[in-house]
Amino acid sequence: MSGVLVLLLVAAVASAGWALWSADKAASERNRANLESQRATGLRLSAEAQGMLAGTRAGGAVPGLLKLLAAQRIAADTETEGAILSQLLALGDLERIIEVGAQVNAVAFSPDGSRLVSGSGDGSLRLWDARLLKPIGAPMNGHRDSVLGVAFSRDSTRVVSGSEDGTLRLWDANSGQPIGAPMTGHERGVRSVAFDSQGARIVSGSSDRTLRLWDATTGQAIGVPRRGHLGQVRSVAFSGDGRRIVSGSDDGTLRLWTVGQGPAAAVLPIAENKESVFSLAFDRGVMRIVSGSAGGILRWWEERTVQ
Image (cartoon, rainbow, N blue to C red; front, side, top):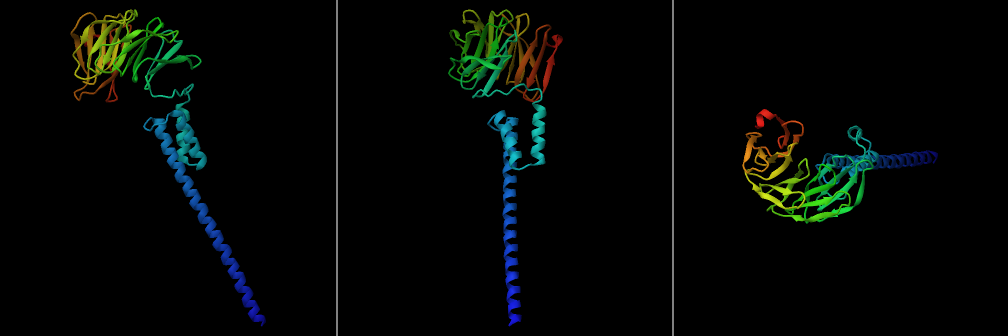
């Protein structure tokens, strides 16, 4: 009888031990599954965040950085930690990130450095205090489509904007109020605008492949459209003396124009593969131009090459 009791006791102990081992194993498997799920979630959030920070995914910089921090909190990972450190280093010289609520297509500082203006995809402009980095007044509404180009006059008192709606508008840079009626004449969107150094004239470049000159006081067009480009005109700029205009186009060329004359004075080819010219600028002191193209290349054009 005692032998039977011993066997029963051993069986009971073994059964209890098996149950405990099974329970521990199940708990361990659940924990491992939870950790794997957390890691997968963290990696997914990290990948999404890095896409937002790189601009390849919608969302913006601030949500992207917050998502990256959340990914590291959910599942600490060396790759995510490295991405956070890289972003912090990249932001080391950044004073502030400002969410404006719409895609920002164009920005410009006032020549006196006190303000900046931004043009957005919702058709509005905003003035900003360049020192406090705070908006000045309410959004400036007047365009019916995305604002693609903005510029200050040399005395910082006026702003000109160009829009996908095909118009330009002048604005009082102190009050934010529009000056006069919209400036019409282009057949498609206005991609780039610039004042001359005296603030007397404005030049605009358009998706209709033309440039136009405007009287900055009356808002009236000066002469006929300048034709010559075979693609949309993405960027325009005046020379420092206001006597020349340079334009860059999707046709892969820069064209140099003499103010007051029709035909282009020079055509400066960018590359044989017709790289779009996205941006350009005149050096105000000398006859020198810098251009940026779709091929990821900056090019300098000296006086001897553009005359």
